[in-house]
Amino acid sequence: MLSIRSIVSISMVFTVLISCQSKTEEKAVATPPEIQFPERPNILWLVTEDMGPYIPSFGDSTIVTPNLSRLAKEGVIYPNLYSTSGVCAPSRAAITTGMYPTSFGANGMRTTSYTEVTGLPSYGAVPPPEARMVSELLRMNGYYCSNNDKEDYQFKAPKTAWDESSPYAHWRNRANNQPFFSVFNFTETHESGLFEPYGFKNIETRHYQAGDTSYTWAGGRMLEEETPIHLSKDTEFSIPPYLPDTPIVRRDMWKLYNNIAEMDKQVGAVLKQLEEDGLLENTIIFFYGDHGGPLPREKRLVYDSGLNTPMIIRFPNKQHAETKDDELLSFVDFAPTLLSLVGIEPPAYMQGQAFLGKYKIKKERKYIHGAADRFDGFTDAIRAVRDDQFKYIRNYRPNQGYYLPVEYRERIPTMQELLRLSDEGGLDSIQSLWFRESKQPEELYDCKTDPYEVNNLAQDPAYDKKIEKLRTEMDRWLSEIGDEPSLPERDLITKLWNGADSQPITSEPKIESKDNLITMSCSTEGASLGYKIIDKEGTKTKVWNVYQKPLKIPVGSKVVAQAYRIGYTPSKIVEKEL
Image 1 (cartoon, one colour):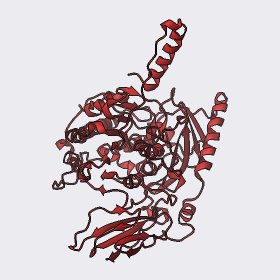
Image 2: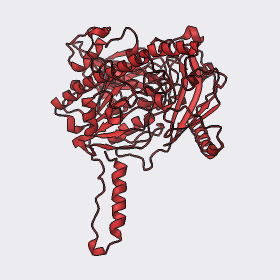
Image 3: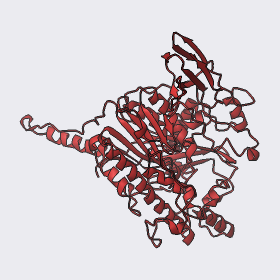
Image 4: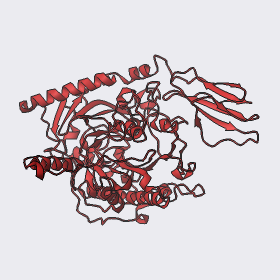
């Protein structure tokens, strides 16, 4: 498979060669054309969870994934996509806002719970007032936006964010010929799929009936003996060196790949619906994971095993099919790229950069950044920066051990096996690294020669220039986004709430009417206004519309409105009758 960049390089070399010939022998050399996008393309995001590069398109042929392999054959693979955190909610916050989670208090995981453990109040992230979820920005520009069905952004999504966010959400529910942005979340590959008793989640069947609001499903799990088997349990697996090679670990590896195969079937079901609707060639399809893998020393960590996730993009009419793009990409780039693809200039508050579309940046990014802070009831403070080869990690709590006893993770049999062997002294020198009682203040890894990041080069004088360059980049990034890794979490909450003792509340919307013209406003800076219309027969519109300008409604109707500011408590619902 030739990469886009490789094709360009070959063309340049050929150009140089023929330029040495006589002018009469010169021939024009074609370079790959720019991707052509429909004027108002549909966008489909297929998002799986806890996903490292475990699929054939990215070099791992353990399990067969016919639907993802077809998508890759018809599209472009991106092997260098990195989440901003090794866990889902902060990463999804970055995806939907185009901002680094550490810049607006979104990098803690489960800050609305574990209050008895931490002694801290429940709180959510608070982005700047101008920030919006990217789906709301698309809705304001005429797109139908649906999310099926996981949200989890480290803040509660406002009602203005989606036309529909539910197990039934689907592009099929939009108005005729309305362009759409539809997200389908596949949770089968989540780390909880490794828990005992093992089994598939019945709720996942919704993807086969997506859009059918008459369908009902059973919750819970099917036990292992009832689930489809996609892979022999006797399969030989490549065990990463940070995990022990034991029957329990191999069993979890089998579960991991078996879950991927089931997820692939569900992806195929959604793609089939897209083809049945005749929308394939007017839709840009993204497949990616919400961060790296589900196993211990993968999820929640800032090593590549926790941040790197595969991405495939299929462009209309298979443009640039079966190619690879090696550029460094971050989750903060998703929101600006999504807007760029539909012709909207990304707003200045977004910290990412568009890598496709009308507003594509001219220079590719040189670095990606990652961070780890709060995980349930446990906290740390770690920052990372990576270029195309080296990663620099700064540990702000070096006296604290690497391993955090997160109860949720300890439900994984492999985690239980690691803890048992650690207690018994049965781990080797690499497997023991994670269980040291203290951390080195700095880490430096050559990710090409040491992809598992187990050989710390920070103290090697041969790498002094490299580590200094990455230190400087990290300092620049922290300053630019206003990240204070050493700030105590209680002080962070005070900062987010502007010194208040409790979560701020969005002011109630003010509704005025004149000659059937409705005008709405809210005194809370940056608040979004959602509204519904109730006609004189009492019929209410299903969707919360985003208020943008004065609107006319029929005499005898009512308008129902609510104001939202992300990170604030929503206002009370107010009504006005004409």
